[in-house]
Structure formats: C-alpha cells, structure tokens
Image 1 (cartoon, one colour):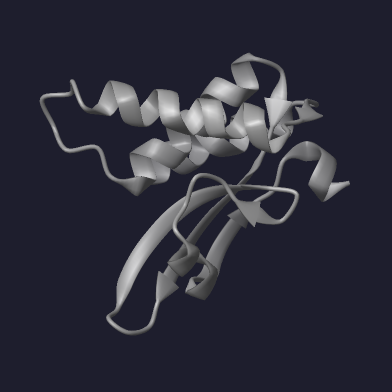
Image 2 (tube, helix red, strand yellow):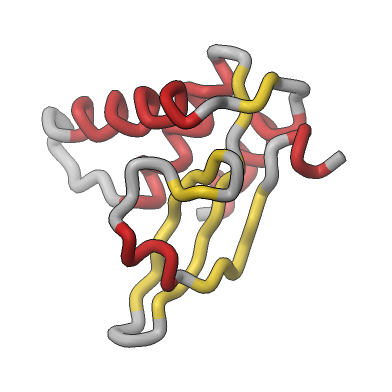
Length: 108
C-alpha cells in the first residue's frame, strides 16, 4: 500500500485543473472495464489509485480517500470530486475516511 500512496501523493502534488464528475466517472469506468481483463483481482484500492493516475495524466485532479465502514467492518478506497464519491454506491457515504490525499487545488 505504501507504493500506491506514494503514487497518489506524487500525482496530487502537481497543479491540475479539478476534474468534473463526468471526467472522473470516465476514468473510474475505464479502470473497471480494463480490470475485467486482468488475470488478478482488481479491488477498490487499485481502482482508485489508477483513476487518480489517469486523471493526473490528463491534467485533472481528484481527492483520494481510504476509509472504513463499521458494520460489517471493511476497508474501502475511492475518489471524490467536489466532495462527492465518484461512481460509487450510496453506501460509500457511510465510510469514515481514515486517510485523505487531496488534489493540489483542494489543499491550497
């Protein structure tokens, strides 16, 4: 996980225009579509990191979050745009964020 965090932090340090919801959804769906052809399981951590990297390569930023849901206890990672989870079920709203890496625009 440490390597993935470094990737997200590096991508988030660059000045990017904030992604809009449509751009962010396209990135998340592209990662999920490609994950269907992967020989290994692609979970939310890999999906969210890949989506941040895709957005960064296109000059856009998004907030990355890693959190926990209490009942049943499970970890989850996702990206947010304008404070809203991108391409996530409503249950993501119940996640308590444990780690947040904002895009450069959000941290200034």
